[in-house]
Image (tube, rainbow, N blue to C red; front, side, top):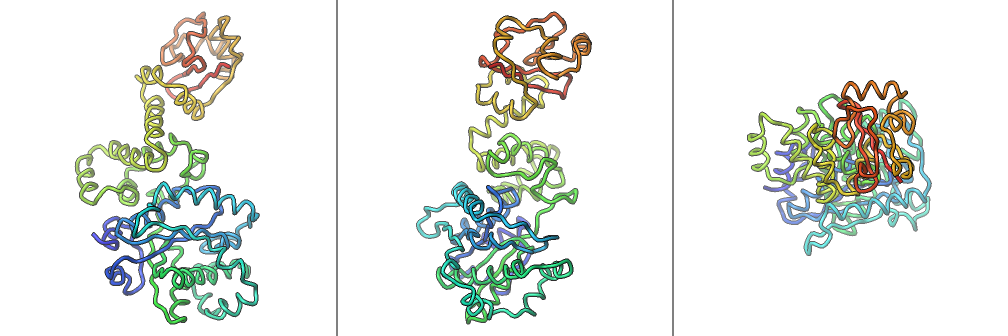
Length: 422
């Protein structure tokens, strides 16, 4: 299956310029996608474009990641409601360095023929002064052409600075430089980038060359919200942004209606494998979600991170998971502590014996008063390390600590708390 056929069955082909498919059939091609370093690491929104580069490489072509060391300093106006606040150069450079390291997880940089390459577009501009830019770059596209783009038209009504207006020129010149320096004939991206990308193909055409554009649809969820957003914010591809457990749970909790789209966009399984899985789990979408969650958590994080995330998920949602909790190592218990409300108490207080009611009402804020704590125990609502407690006189000791440090308290089915004694 060639690259265009691959995108088509996955539902990932939105638009392409004429003759793009025919050009790809001639042999190995080089294509790129740009990433601006406006965040400290990559998101699952970026993951769509990473998958595009991955599939491009698996189809025998050479991917280039163009890091926006220059364009990140300007701001892309495409379909934004207002101008983006500019970040400091130091912050952008730090973001770029962190993002660049992340790509090695997803693309093969060592393939002998079509290994991935990272280019920083600051190298195109660092020796160029404003007069050179206006003569060599600004002369190649007319204002009429640039303002005809839908992404620009929207902002002209609300206000668009020359800084952001010039972004289209920078992206076009990026394409020209990669075309000239690296024989890169393809630029890819989301459908919101179509105007910027085709500005590049037009720029190259006016210079006597021929280049091509391919875009994916913008991925939205069945409820109408943007992919990559949640109530807590974005989902990141690094543990310091989103824990492996929360990343795993994002896919497990996805809407059934989104599952066919998500699995096609993000799995590396073949069409035949995907269709076989969908047939096998037609009446059990939750099982298919877990299969997808496993694959993506391993690829984005690691096998060990997946195993830990799976244990935490089972602990959170399985009423009979006492054995899971008791068998957890200290690292996994620490992950649990990061995912639920946690209280730290001096270890000395439990060494001498600590009444459970005192823990619930005085040492923590799990319950508002000792009276409430006693009633909760009487009503069989309180568990310690997954064991129900029915005696308000229950005394906790160091033997109740898991790995010598942790204790899980539950108040009812949904309210889980971690106690850390140190």
